[in-house]
Amino acid sequence: MPTPSLSAERCNPNDKKVLLQIKQSFGNPYLLASWVPSNDCCDWYQVECDPNTNRIISLTIFAGNLSGQISAAVGDLPYLQTLIFRKLSNLTGTIPSAIAKLTHLTTVRLSYTNLTGPVPAFFAQLKNLTFLDLSFNDLTGSIPPELGQLTNLDAIHLDRNKLIGVIPEWIFTGTVPDIYLSHNQLTGAIPKSFGYYNYTTLDFSRNMLSGDLSFMFGSNKTVQIVDFSQNMFGFNPSNVVFPASLTSLDLNHNKIFGSLPEELTTLDFQYLNVSYNRLCGKIPVGGKLQSFDATSYFHNQCLCGAPLPAC
Image (cartoon, rainbow, N blue to C red):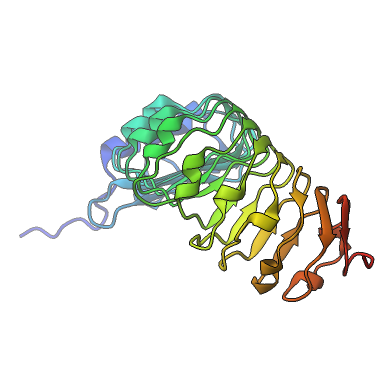
């Protein structure tokens, strides 16, 4: 039997052709200098081949000088599981619909770029997605409610964009993801359906959201990190049971009124900020509440007691 050639290329020829199309669409940048036809594409930087099938399963283009738009050719890497374009300030244009063909995707991270246009509803078709990060872009329009159909999602990052409108009713039938929506221009109330689920992290800070938040808490919840700061929420925390799991609570710059409940002394806070609200009464003594300085409590209507001046 003839000895197999040691130089036999692992890379699938179709995958190689597609990658070279992507490189060409970006004007053959230095960041993709290792992508040369004479080399096995499984050895190129920024890509990863499956060890068994040798098909491209990961495309990770990160932190470099790369200009242009994401080529529709990306959709012709049918076994892709990870797609990352990150920290590429000259990456422009919209998110191509060809990504919807990549049904094996588990991780999509298109962040810290200058992508524009809407958050595509087609992401809902990618049922294997566990992580979706579209943060730090210039995306506009509203949040598509279809994203609530992603039953395997562990985290969704839509923060630091220019999204408007209300937060849609998301009906989570599988995993309940960590949700990051901060630094947008979202308005209205948080849908009551959000109160049915248990989250680990919720960051809705720096929007224009309003209404009562108390339904988001309760003794049966397991939420750990909550940031609803710099909105227009209004509710009385003295009527709220905060879950024992809570370690970080940021409610600064809202319209929260009433007093702080004694139960807060039982929580193992690593971070707490209720400044710039309309709270009154004595800060409960005990637990971690006096371990934070006055900036966590100041600029309220008539809140008093350590670490603020005595009542």
